[in-house]
Length: 339
Ligand code: NDP
Image 1 (cartoon, rainbow, N blue to C red):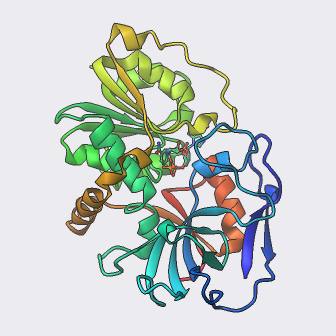
Image 2 (cartoon, rainbow, N blue to C red; image 1 turned 120 degrees about the vertical axis):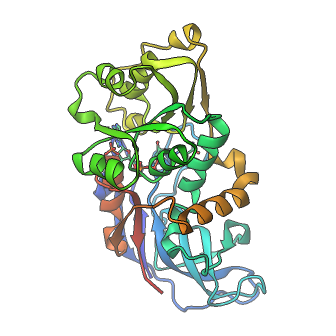
């Protein structure tokens, strides 16, 4: 059983050497009898930015840190190999919290849910389009942003797991949507594959305020913020009266690499802007409605989903480090096995 373990708590930006791929001593492909644990074979594993917080010892987050020496924990899609629980039979496909390893012994059944392999979407999409990032886009856009047809929407990290769907939901809702992303390849995808009205590479814009004024001459009604920092500051300057900012993530702040700070909060008052942080987990009661919406729109061809598949557990440390430096194009997934 190959595993990817956290070697030590991360200081600064995570490096591949903070993780190690090793063989574990676990033997046998059965769950211990009478343990009510069950054994799964991991097929696809998710790389998500929040996991970086779990790699640090003191981080004041809402979820505990990883344990050094233990496999990294995250969302995955897996096949049940052995189980005493009649609700999970060998061969069933499940998604939920698992480990970065070939096989995981799952002790808490509530960590996993059975997925229907006949929905007409690739299994790996249960980590993106139909998984936590897709649900974040759905809850964040429809519930936090209170969108109206015809409004103007800015999305940052727009080609990523969450951003690409926020933009497409906003287009389906009749909004004008502009995405910011970190490469010309991503900008091209946003404009030519994902249906954004406009997109720009924020790294080519020395003055983000001027860039936003170019794309939003009348101002921004909704800013779906995935990055925080300098982009948030520029968006604050360009919001319209009664605008909404959904604070989804602050990936630019994870390694404290951006020290420019926020100077434009006064706009919250002068323009009566609502700025709301949210966690997708606060909205889980909407999950079944979300799955229905996303499957329907995907199967009708109204939305598309881009993922970046890296092959094999050995590739996991590089894939994770790449996620935080923008190497991923679309949802970052590690393919451990295809069946
Ligand atoms: P992505 O797939 O978008 O990957 C992260 C992206 O962030 C990179 O590809 C890169 O894109 C961008 N990025 C990295 N460093 C910087 C930087 N310094 N400045 C600006 N952009 C940067 O990730 P997700 O879609 O999974 O997550 C997006 C955000 O949503 C994250 O902040 C995450 O923490 C948050 N999130 C929040 C949830 C919630 O419940 N509130 C749930 C899930 C995610 P580029 O090349 O375009 O810069």
